[in-house]
Image (cartoon, rainbow, N blue to C red; front, side):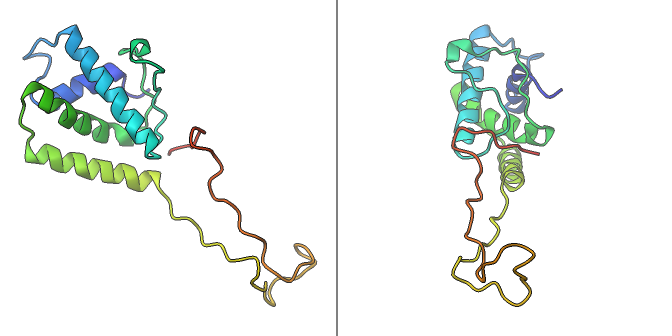
Length: 160
């Protein structure tokens, strides 16, 4: 079981120096941070980084105690980037190390979420001597290219 939304929010506050054991976080602070977390995850989802985070249909329907269902490899990117987004609202300076860790974690997230598209040859290219017609089909040319994306913009793409 991964982090809950509350754990992400509390860890982001700790990242900017507002840990719960030093500062008493008010419910409105947690709600504001939860809205920022949902907005950040929606932005990443729009960019094609689909982590399985349950996006609410409205800010009123977001539950801070809900499980986030994101892979463990994305935790550092979420915590540090959310901390950076929250810091300005509370007048906190962002440490250079936090900025560096956030950038590295986001780049790692991007590298895990992307894969190179395999090269596809045009259907007008001859198949060559190694392609025997009785193995596949009786056509001397390469098969037409296929679309490598099997899902629409709102479809489910598995992330491992």
